[in-house]
Length: 168
Image (cartoon, rainbow, N blue to C red; front, side, top):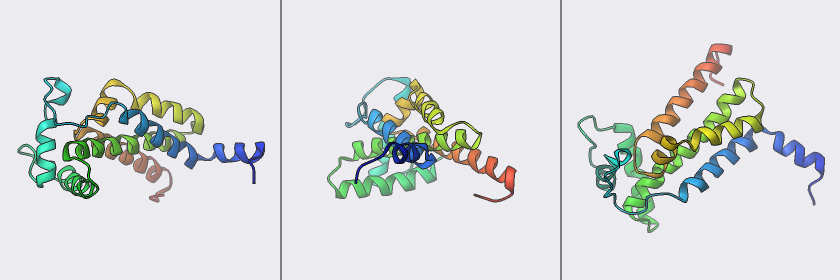
């Protein structure tokens, strides 16, 4: 059963397709620069990476604030990946990469909600996700990619709730 031009066009006009494409594209691109080893960098972008790589596999606390959501979810993620043979430092970076991909998908959803055509929203998502800061923080074990995803989800929910009074 082949794809006809009409079915191809219908499939790629779907909002869901563009959301998934954005997440997968960003994840693939970020994986090309993912930090797989323990951090030893003096880069200002990587100030806390070594601490995060050390704390997550031990279910430890980050800084004095602790980042409780990031620490708990990241520790569970790293522990799961360790069962699959993934090194803790790589698992911590993969946690950030996953949230960077989620943030990319949320940019598409937010833009579509604002009336932007899905293909254009996809391109906007790539631009936003591949800026220097977003890309770096999705490649390293850092809390900022989770923060981006939560901020975008909050904006999307606020926009939808403000229009209809419903969560969807």
